[in-house]
Length: 158
Image (cartoon, rainbow, N blue to C red; front, side, top):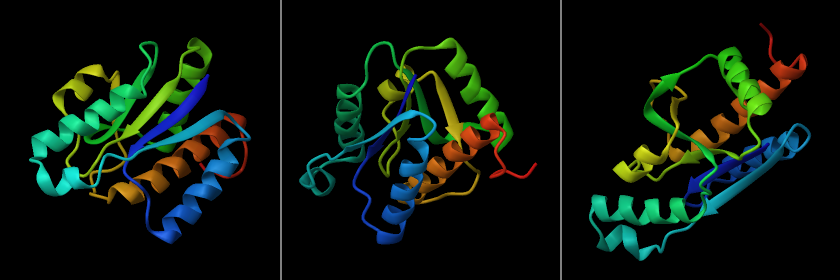
């Protein structure tokens, strides 16, 4: 099973880039993993309404999805899980699915209704609000943690 992180917008803060690179490198040991960054035209943010922006971002998201993908949105309205629960959820998908598991981090305005309709699951990392760039790093750390839990490695202390 391939795991994909689909993210809208570039990561610009150097300390986040460094952390993302570190966890991306670690994850390659456990999974066929890929990060896809979608870069909508910059002028869209200054010349468009929120709904137009969400529609444009959704078009970019849909352009990278396959019909067989299992899509999980990282969003504030999603279900919260502990690290152990997430590792169990991930392990279930590994055992039953050969399709891609695609996690999507949207833009600053969230997702259009069509993206919500396409997803299979909505996951919230926390009730707290984080920048979209920070969510990337937190998600990758939790994905790495989940794999170490599955493998019984000492990274996660229960």
